[in-house]
Length: 297
Image (cartoon, rainbow, N blue to C red; front, side, top):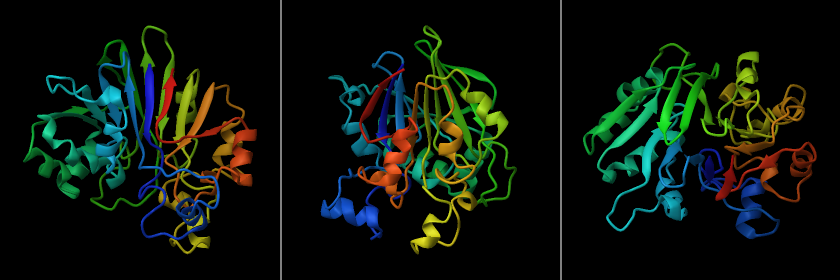
């Protein structure tokens, strides 16, 4: 299985246009080693010929251009075959509108996500006015073939984050994906939104070769302390990296070949390559994704 991290930042990217936090200032000024990042999205393929996107960020046009494997061929045929959505957040779905010129889209999403995109944000109804959209229902626990020997199994990721649109059930609002190469049996888990490592979520990580996991905030009070918000990371639906019960403490002992933080917020000091927080992550055997990271799983 071939994997390319198209975007590794959380919503707003890095640096974020309206932010002057220490990491954003550092990357703009070049005063400390740090690399700009676009908003979270990943591409996967069994053969480097046909690809599926895991979320479609607002930066999707530039992200597709950055990867030659995702360019159209001489006849104008595009290698993008489907988009798999983890949730209905704008930073994971706005890119769908930018894919409207492709002649049609296949979108895999839970019923909860589809309802939000259709009746809440109206994004899906807008998209359908421009191109045909084929919705493939995502049912957590079901194995679904993607073609070319690649399959996925979605799993529910519990969240207590308040829904901005509607008041439907929490089940299916956020999912992770376990993608398996049926030929080798090796698996990738994509988990960019994670509020808690419950036993049910941990069960999906067993025997996976690579984990792309939520790295939004370093500390639970990060946004409050920097004056960038009034809620903790957990209240926003994200498990912080540091502290008792943080993701670093829980993920470090896992026997997973590569554990990589994605969906990293612009305020997170792990974006600064010389920071003690970045050093702590690496000393525990985890990595911080960059845009353009290529993986063979």
